[in-house]
Length: 261
Image 1 (cartoon, rainbow, N blue to C red):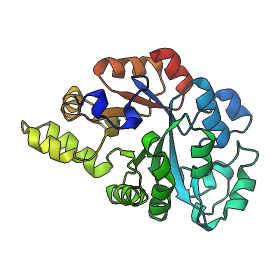
Image 2 (cartoon, rainbow, N blue to C red):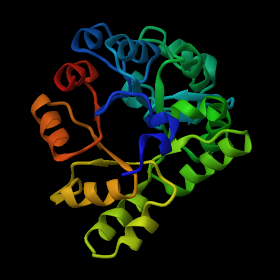
Image 3 (cartoon, helix red, strand yellow):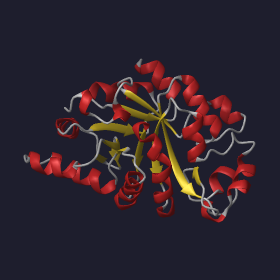
Image 4 (cartoon, helix red, strand yellow):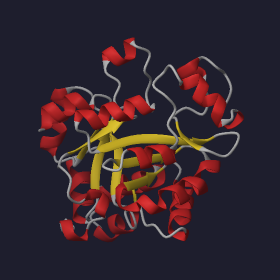
């Protein structure tokens, strides 16, 4: 595996296995108080619990602000059917005021300088502005998207602004890596994983096992880490770490830190 000195700064000098707080941290008590995922309060809770990594998602508002939000609309989180792209920042801030507070990408990066952010770009329109925003913080940001074209667009924007964030592969890269790992040709694995620092994958996709010893070995030979999502049971966390995964993406970063430290 690539030596620590050769890895991206995002992966250096932090605890291993990595605990990535999925959309921040919302404990049962916080949920009872109305706090929601990806809110400013959820990021603060993850940081307070000791999480070095926070996984979040971003969309673009009607007035061009990059905000941390998973869904493309407000229906699930605030009961409003409108899409994020249809709502201006000030109105989103009002809607989120009693739910933990809206966090823009810029605010999160500035307010939590010790946190390493894993940013999943959820909308094409957010790719370029998100890339520009993370560029000054590139040593502690990983950019990703299920859509590899969108991910590459965000990376190009970051590079144009003078930053080189880490990145994990989207669906196409993951599929290519899984298939290549089944074949006895190292060059295919190297090609599939070229330019990525991590694979972030589910343990299973339906009945198909995605996370396997074969995939882990193939990725590690290329210096690529494997992070598995979304793992909330301590027994599963321990089992996957014993298998060799490098990171656990979890809704319960507090439990993961207690379990794995």
